[in-house]
Length: 145
Image (cartoon, rainbow, N blue to C red):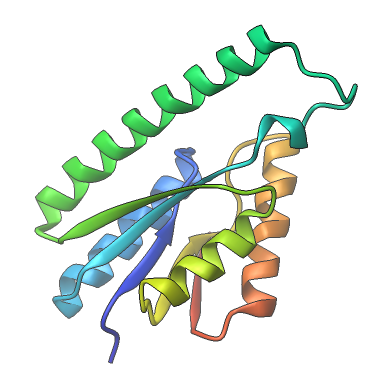
């Protein structure tokens, strides 16, 4: 049926449910998964148009720490589920675009994505990204609530 699942995550609690569901499905089907984390460049959030070098360094450092922690958690979960995973990290002002391009590049034939991610503004952004993935995907998309 499916040969590889793509699982986007931002490390949030709800995205974690999507990861769990995607890994469980991959295990049941005996297939590998690709886990993707897309970081929006700081410039995308900078409303003033000028970002201090120190702020950029701080942002970059925080993103790297988040990625390390997300990968550690997913590796632990995938080991317990006995699912082979690989990781993709993208920097893109459109997470949906990065997700769809990665699905194609990695020959993923199913995307398992959470309906939302972080809270507040981040929730609105990820929710709209999930909608864009649904609207533009050429492969099936399973949305986990």
